Length: 239
Image (cartoon, rainbow, N blue to C red; front, side, top):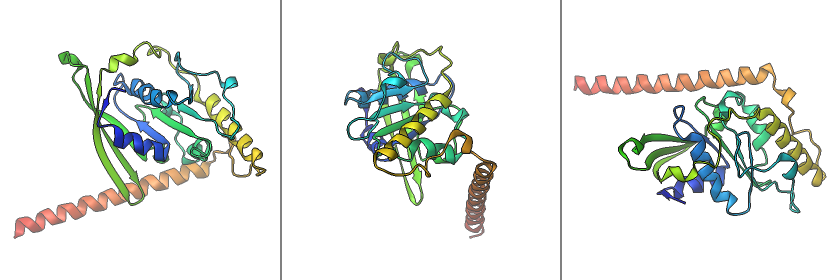
């Protein structure tokens, strides 16, 4: 794989199993998603995606293995348009490690904050100068743990032709429902009830209120930090 200094963020993805790739339209978000997915496909993982790709598997052929694991990479192109509630993320990622799944969301539109814990964003591309190089930065923000770094993708053109850039993408609800059904099957295989597994219809107004409250709380914290920084600057000037 033609990544430079990407081991830290790939290790983070192995741990958290969910990553959001942000950036402008046409900024190689989906291309990066498939390049990262290749790392897992080389290990025998299957690929579930709403984008047309020569590597993807048909949903009917993706089932739990003998260990009740799905053993799959899931790419939801422009998933930020759909995932606006933390409850929706819970639906698909509750058993990510147990079912051995990795979720990648390349999207200009930001998904719910629950899907923004690990983020990759392009910083600069040198393709216009003739150099096949893209620089990326990444960050992790969960609870009191924060980390960040950078990496380089050398020769991004190697992924061209693997997927269709013109394809608008299938409705991600079909994939989400598929993942919910597999989660139910996983619990049944271990003799557990499905009370903890949500359905697509279970997203309520309470979820929207919870998201709004979280957004207000985070805005208040940022405002408080800004006021504190401003006060420190004024204090320094007085001295």
